[in-house]
View 1 (tube, rainbow over the protein chains, first blue to last red):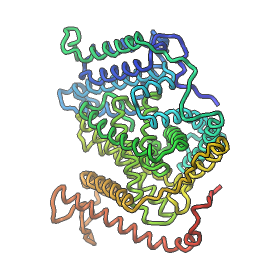
View 2 (view 1 turned 180 degrees about the horizontal axis):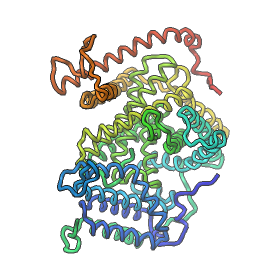
View 3 (view 1 turned 90 degrees about the vertical axis):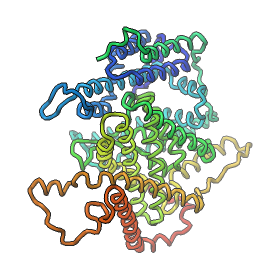
View 4 (view 1 turned 180 degrees about the vertical axis):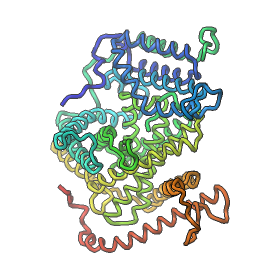
Amino acid sequence: MHHSYIDHLAHRPGILQSLDPRGKVAATIGYVVAVSLTPNGAVLRLGLLLTLLLGVCIASSVPLAYAAKRGLLVLPFAGPVALAMPLAQPGPIWTTIGPLELSRPGSILAATIITKAFLAATALLVLAATTRFNHLLAALRWYRLPDIFLSILAFLYRYLFIVVDEGQRVARAGRTRSPGRYRRPVTTAAAMIVGLVRRSFDRAQRVYTAMLARGYDGTTRSDHAQPRGAHNLVVSLTFGVIALSFALSPYPVILRWTL
Amino acid sequence: MHIPDGILSIPVLAGSWAVSATALTWATRRSKKELDQSLVPLAGVAGAFIFAAQMIQIPIPVVAGTSGHLLGGTLLALLLGPAAAILVMAAVLTVQCLLFQDGGLLALGANFLNMAVTGPLVGYGMYRLLRPITGRFHLVIATAVAAWTSMVAGSLLAGLEIGLSSPIHVTTAMWALGGVHAAIGLIEATATALICSLSFRKEAHVPLWQSRWNQEVQTVEQALSPADGRPEPDQPPTKRGRSKTAIWMAVGGGSSLFLALILAQFASKLPDGLEHVLESFGIRPGPPRFPAPMPDYSVPWLAGWPGKALAALLGLIGATLLAFALSRFVGSSQRSNESESPGDHTNGDEED
């Protein structure tokens, strides 16, 4: 069965791939905070934040089309919420579509919301794509997240691909048995889910007993050297600080231009 | 229901982080006591399954053209216990946020609150509230109601958060999200009830898989370390005391009360579907032949919101009493064949 691992870009050479994961986590949080704090309609600040992200993507060979595609996955939720804004926010009317009166501040708010959601999601994607999951977990452990939570997280990741595997088998079986039908009845879907539970559970159990047989004692060991070092941290933190300064800069003349 | 970054305002973000961090801390402490090492992978695979099940989009029969997916908080709470369920749901949401950009990083606090904390707690509370209605059929009803309630409660919270941090009116946002998820919740209820009815033993509170998992894994562990003589806890089925039951029933009762109070806000704001259709055809219902005790969901002698709330509360009590009465009626036919095997929970009666 075929599926793409999410951290497949972590094996390419690049700036982000060589940085300490602890620093990357901090910088990403800084960037997302910066995006969230940007006021409505601050086109220039959002543009600078986007440029920063673009630069990082290019420097660490993250394909831009891939990043954009994954970033746009926020639309199904952010889209409807944003579309409600031009109607909900009072203000001068910008344009009318049929009976709907779209207010100007509401439209600006909608555009800002979508841009912010896109930027934050893409930043997370860049972090996840360029960091091995084990290293990410190690970084989170360094930040003192509880062990039990992290080992659940590790097992979840380990078993995710097993379940997806089994899910693809179940889905394929479903397709071959009802060709040409896109929508399946609720009862069939529920039966498929129950079957999925059964199969993935049994297989996960076999995986775990195999892990025990090979000496698993509750700790994760990796033979991949983890990038570490003070200069690494400095590079990442600089990124976060730059992003925050874009968003927070009170009133430098350039950054004041808003819609 | 995964809220992305950039929608919620800073105070809402801070507040939701505070609440869900508290709940997560409680869940961590609790799970450290309850969850031993060999059960951690079980939690992991349950999470991975929930993750995969959330990817399956199921068409909603009620609302044409929409589809929804499972949340699974109630299911996890029933399989693993509420504390572990909170942690597992939080892990699922974290992976979705970090690796799949589903839900924002700063909004993770709100998403934890809506799905990881509310789902298991409300679901488990409702289940414990309804559980005294015994019997296999009623187990299905109890799990279904618990799952539906937990999903709607979570979506109402999401609506509240979005409403509080945007110009959209709070009630509008709650109404929109709650309405959609009341329909999606039917799928959640069906799936949860189905999976639970397949996985619970007849009368025990312990899920089938958990005990089977323990058996097989412990066999391997014993084979690996015969000399150690590791103490093998027999994992007695969770025997919770009466006080715990009371607490969980209180949580369930409290959450349904909360839900009733919130729903009371909406109760007669919009005409319900039937009335709407009738009015659009120009049919005005005449004076009712049988005067309802509480017309339009409000107590006649108490005007305004408190009246509606009281009406909702009375309706809730009435529904519960009705459910109890029904269960006595239907359950009497089932009890005869259940009482035949009282020691049933020690030997597995697996259905395959």
